[in-house]
Length: 197
Image (cartoon, rainbow, N blue to C red; front, side, top):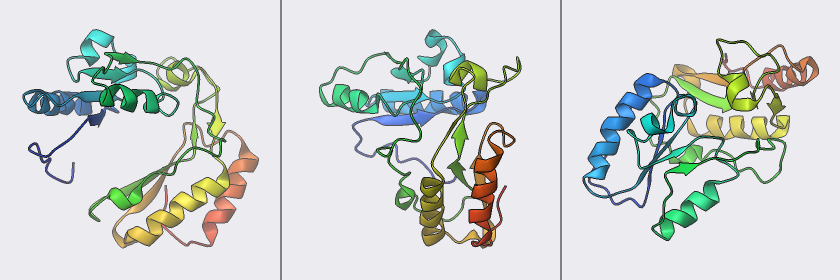
């Protein structure tokens, strides 16, 4: 969305994320560019997890049909050994409270063009609304990251980016769940005096 892709670069694996159908459509174009060079491409994301595998495989060599944290090491090992599978899917939901989950690498973002900087606060929702993918993907379970981790991610963003032109976007399926957690989070945010949504 913000930078041109170097289709001539040297890559072991290209990862694509499709949150919606437009991203998947763009992903298919990107996939075919790298396919010409025999560079493997894997795609995941909310939209990909809701369509048939056959359709997802039109956008990549391989698709991630679940959360990736617990099986990403397997994907990388398979790429290293030239045996990338067409489908990767974990049957468990990731423990977001775990101490071993790495923080996003904000230092890898090379520019300051982004209007929103997203921080995932929680995943899932206890409701089962038929119009929403959250209950399908997250099995009607709500899981939160530790507040300390959220705050550390925020500090990394503040160190790297100029927030005069952008907002912090806290990603949460249902802000009304776990009110004590949210009140504590909002209290922590007060001291930063930043625009957020």
